[in-house]
Amino acid sequence: MRAALFRRHGGPEVMEVGELPDPVPGPGEALVRVRAAALNHIDVWIRRGLPALKVSFPHVPGGDVCGVVAALGPGAQGVKDGVKEGDRVVVNPGLSCGRCHKCLSGEDNLCPDYRLFGEHGWGGQAELLPVPVTNLVPAPPGPTDEELAAVPIAGLTAWQMLVDKARVQPGETVLVLAAGSGVGVFALQIAKLRGARVIAAASSDDKLARARALGADETIRYGVDSTAADLVPALRAMARRGVDVIVDHTGAPTLPSLVKACAKGGRIVTCGATAGHDAAVDLRYVFWRQISLLGSTMAPKGRLFLLLTLLADGRLRSVVHQVLPLEQVADAHRILETRQVFGKVVLRL
Image 1 (cartoon, one colour):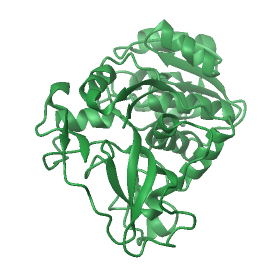
Image 2: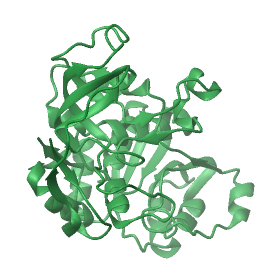
Image 3: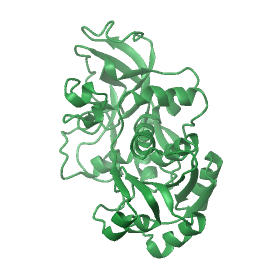
Image 4: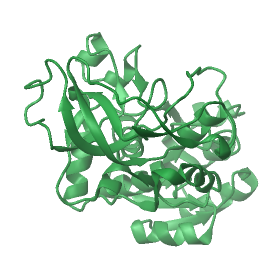
């Protein structure tokens, strides 16, 4: 099979398309013929190299996949109703043991053995991917393969941040930082679905215009080096009593500002630290205003069924910035690194 892979850590130039042996589905697995695979920033970080995450070379990235069931492994028939050869499916990117207390309580993303396709093992930026049948979700008929591939990681992350963690309520004010990111575009829409007033923050006028088209009520232009001196006054002008919920994955440069911009009883929910992880926080604001700082990683598998239903019903939009053929995977990485992307970059196979 053809696969996007890298044989050493480095810049986009280390990405190549090579030939690898066709995988064989194991017990309880389906072999998915991949049609579309979306990129995430984790693909960039793994390609560059992470001290705490060792990968074997060659490594195939990619956790967001839409494809067709090509074959079923031993014991896979009948494990999940409706899964048969030829079915179009979306791959649930999270893997867990399936036996521990967290898994059996519907919190599989808290499993001690939790991992992601393309991060802790080979991913789906390849022609074929073996997947446990329990990780397959039937694809709704309307959206394209590329639109479906853009949903899982970003959509699941945004849903847990806003609904499961922050518990956004109608009428609350929600600030979405990096509103043009994959997580940002879903967070904006989910907040609107929950009846919130949304302030979208992004680094360019073009991204802000697109955010308004997605439903943002107000917008703020900011950069990754924003501080309390430039971000907080703009937020206070828009939300005089403060912001109820803040969605962030930028990290250290903005967190001090966010704490000061939060309303009493407000919640800051974070799923990453793309611009830095070592943040200084004035704890006086945290305890006096009774602010909650919430960490979030992915979401339980079952949430993907709901996200795809909302997508099929037109209540959520999958935003695809650009589609490239697999052979241009290095260019896809370069595009993602420019941070000029609004939505997702997707590879077509």
